[in-house]
Image 1 (spheres, rainbow, N blue to C red):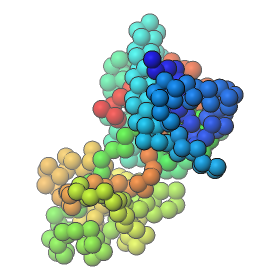
Image 2 (image 1 turned 135 degrees about the vertical axis):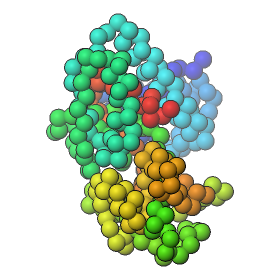
Image 3 (image 1 turned 120 degrees about the horizontal axis):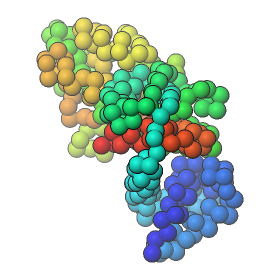
Image 4 (image 1 turned 90 degrees about the vertical axis):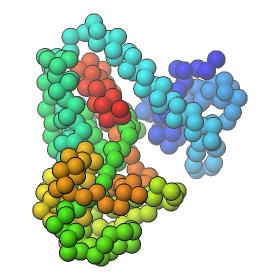
Length: 301
């Protein structure tokens, strides 16, 4: 029978990039991590890692176990929280730090249901564009679009939201047709800046495997707040890549048009992901755990 209790060790090794870093995150000996991985490999009858001199990578079987393990551990956390919360009054203040677009389109919309469930729970949000050290700042939960390097933090990955390429009908009326990604070079670009760097657009054709990129450093208008970029797009400023949740209503109303629908879009690189990040101390708080599970459940649904 598979040793379920060993799955968190596998997940930590993958996300931290090695046995020693995973041991630091889990606050245990490296030999303990190694023993759990060996137990999983014995239970499954397959090697889970390809062990190079300087690099550790998953086998195909290891990748399957990692992906399913994430789902299993998430379900176990949700089950534990649900049982615990039935006998626990959740109250007090939880502080969340998140990028503007994430807070507007994904965090804020899911909070009213949380308030209905726990009326004595208070939430405070702060908009942050760059990375903040959770040990030096004052928030309980951090939403990051890049993975922190500090392996002592708890990092919960979540599905990156769907993005659309959009422009206003007014803008498109006098511009060249946009039929392929090559046509982007002939249009006015509205570019997001993240941590003082231009965010590269990445896009993938639904019938192809390769991910392409578009450098937005030549954008005529750059912004940090997605709300400002979105308003500029609505008023005929050019092409913009925005969260589907932000644009869908205006597309239905005819205020914007969705473009190059044969592609999936993102303002992150293909190897990046999004994370909910918090310290081990924050993880001990019932109210913080309740908010984290609620947010993850809504984002991943």
